[in-house]
Length: 259
Image 1 (cartoon, rainbow, N blue to C red):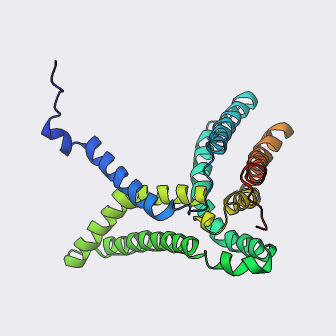
Image 2: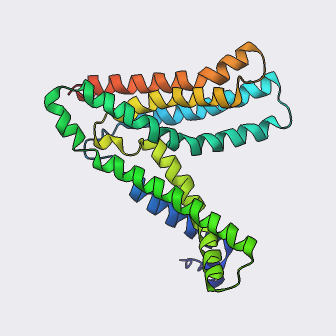
């Protein structure tokens, strides 16, 4: 039997190993902080597969529309920039819109259940706190580092803040990307409050994000069909999946908005 081939010790000092170790570390911490769905979360693999399929089909439909109706050279760059911007802005919008949705959700519940729902807000508030702290630390370190570089500081504080800025760039940015992704996906762990809250918040948030993009960028360029599909295709499909998920919770698992 042939012995397994051992990797060279130099592999552990290579760029690929170090990059993988950094990503794994950031992923582990982001998962621990932002993927705590709660004991009441309903595990439904069918819903998970439909959500993944909707995301893939949505991306494919967008690509097909762009190819069919033509695209300028800078439209690809605009599309990529818009996707990254949406990923960053989604948790921010969620911080502002989520409390309103949760408040309406609690007020809609029967009065005897409201204290119980309010008592479960610890996990979402904790996730929001960690996310805000992440943004503040990254922005603060980079700002101080920029000021230190402008002042050309070469004392111990200058070297310390330079090292902190390097750590933010190397480890903080991947962590922030994953934190944004997981926060948006779990709606800041609102399943701790009620299993139906994540799809409800997702359905509301996708329309808030669509309005935000419309105000920020205006109508997409192209024929009316392209404009309609680009502007409303995503929100309508996400809303349809969210409503179907809520119905599935009610019919298959007996979970209701008022229970």
